[in-house]
Length: 180
Image (tube, rainbow, N blue to C red; front, side):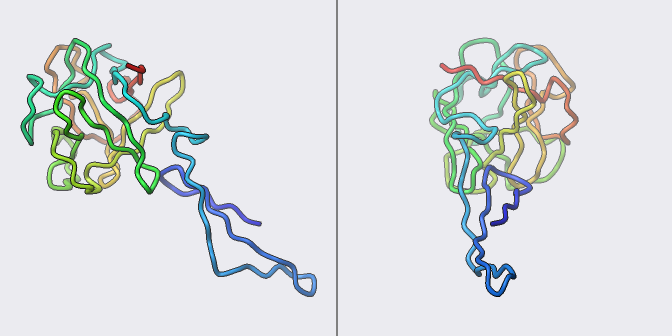
């Protein structure tokens, strides 16, 4: 048996083998087990307040807008998101007040681009990896760009932009998931 850990996601791959004349013979089939929410380092699906470590403020949509393209910010209050797993071990984050998901506009890989909400369409620009940083905090990383959700400039004010940025381990890129 051999195991290969993937670079992203929560899958563990398994390739079966047998021994023939004292030598291993591997099958062509490779199977995987998706560990998201059940043994991987990601959270269980559910509804959460997603709170920034640096500011103590939750992830929200500006003005609680229900419009496609509304900008994502940090904002005092009780904003909640429903986190669900996808087939590849990543997650979607759905803003409860609007029913829309966290989205990277046009699959951009531009650092500094403000995140938005958009009607769910199954696009990979709406999929995220939630990587544990320890002590109950996660970095939210775009499936496509590999950039992290970041409170721009480590701001602590209400309405501060949440952008995608190169992961650097900063407290402004760490998010605590509190069950709602």
